[in-house]
Length: 227
Ligand SMILES: C[S@@+](CC[C@H](N)C(=O)[O-])C[C@H]1O[C@@H](n2cnc3c(N)ncnc32)[C@H](O)[C@@H]1O
Image (tube, rainbow, N blue to C red; front, side, top):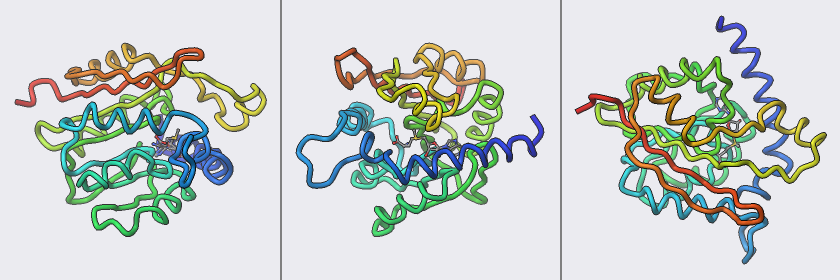
């Protein structure tokens, strides 16, 4: 794909997510301050996933499609340095408002397909509820770009729910998610990374809820032959 096309797509994606971040994302996916019971159990599942994979997260993490930084806040609280990258300016602003008090937080408004961090290298690349957003013809370029950012022995962690439970009306989902409410199974994610030179090291499953059951999967990949 030519980079001009990518730019056009990234701008369209940004528009969708700017709107979503302003309107309702935190209500569904975030930690709701002052509320005992969150509206959904996504955030709780993400916290549990962090604890299940705690040892796998290196110190210097880049979080791709970080949104308002839900899991990134958990990482910052657990002594990680986190660079939050998002194509939505509103998402980056929201993350900044929440986390600029942390010395270890960095905010970056970039398209993950073309992102650059001159002179920096990371131990862990995280996709949390974000990998599904990249289309089939973008994934190889995305993973190649990730390889360029990783330390020897570094890992990619993909946290993604499966199957999706879309509670919105179809019309609303079309408006909010565009074509992107196609979930990707953890086996398919492993196959995509394997085609791009990674091996699956570990996979964890956390149940989000049971009506009907949908789960959060955390897959840890490392580069084949990295050691
Ligand atoms: C479902 S949200 C996930 C947010 C957060 N990681 C979480 O778990 O709550 C997906 C995010 O990916 C971002 N995104 C989509 N395409 C992107 C791209 N090409 N580059 C960077 N961010 C992108 C969107 O702007 C959105 O904030």
